[in-house]
View (cartoon, rainbow, N blue to C red):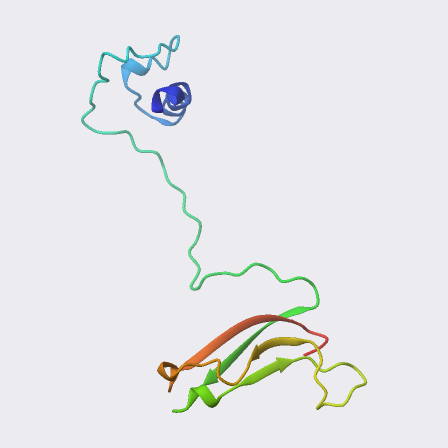
Length: 132
């Protein structure tokens, strides 16, 4: 209920308004309004200055933990997406390049529907900068 917050509303109006309504009694003792008596309607509300943060050209992202990087993988599908599959994995140090390390993204054959034909799909992931 708003009436339960009347004290806070009154203090905010009194503090922030350049012309608070008399019935808020901002310069005297606070008096709660009688619920049976409607509050008077003012012709113009007072305006509070608004300070906006500078806009960015694009959404910003949270900082990454040390040693991590963002990796964007874009897959362009042909006319037979159901036959497409792929895996993104890290290469373990000291192992052969054809041996799979930690799997980051796995899209096995059959993961894509025929309605995905011709689409470019983006996968945004975070990887260890030491492994990639």
